[in-house]
Length: 360
Image (cartoon, rainbow, N blue to C red):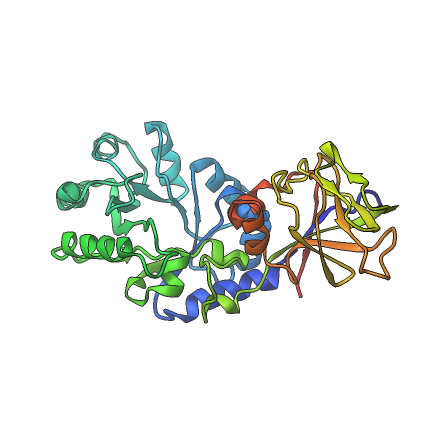
């Protein structure tokens, strides 16, 4: 009943992708990254489905962590951006959140905090990403300061890669060397592996992995990879054909007539647009699947609708199912046509798209 725009979330696929991350380093732990509402998939639903086997979860900020706690999640939750203001620290302590620390100023603030129990700290190093993190020449000092604080329980050494998705990049090698040299004198657990490193850089698989985009079935790599090729799509975005037009050669389609038919063309209108989160800047020729058959977008994506070429799909009719990405069409492929990445596709899906959770 109602508009057919639906994001079907396969919880079994999500669990299988987590198991793949664990399988490459079975003696290590994996923090399942479910920030940004589980990359647009629904963080609480995903966390509840994975909690029986997850080691921990990772989110960006305390608001996301509290949402998970209030949703019934009891496993450890890591705040990847740490705390922003001092008044968060008692909440972090009381909820037993793990907390990233990325600056000397944060350590000073932590030293002044009155907490009911000490916090597990993940000390982040800027090994070359140049976004967040204590600089290498201050890192050992920062670690030693933290070890002296009664507010601190365990310390995990942490960094983040800038180019791990490019397996030929020298940047990753330099970051690994920087991190290893800086931490050589410290005996503490380590976490530097994101999805791309977990899959493609064996030497980065230390005590804690942090798989993110791979959990949602999207490869972090540009090309085929033996591990990434085993990932399963978690979100399938679909809708239906709501109208069909038979157009002659020379007739235009949609706003500004960006597409002009070169031959007689059967055009299907789909209930899906940029207000649903489908990218407006998707190029002419972006693939879609109609009734299990591959075709393409023609014309501009509008707010509530887009148009597709049905000329060669003989069984297409009003009500035919349209897959925009998912089981049969990788989000990474669609993203390339829109000059973006799967992250923005997933997190851009809006609330008017019905979410349906399945175990298949």
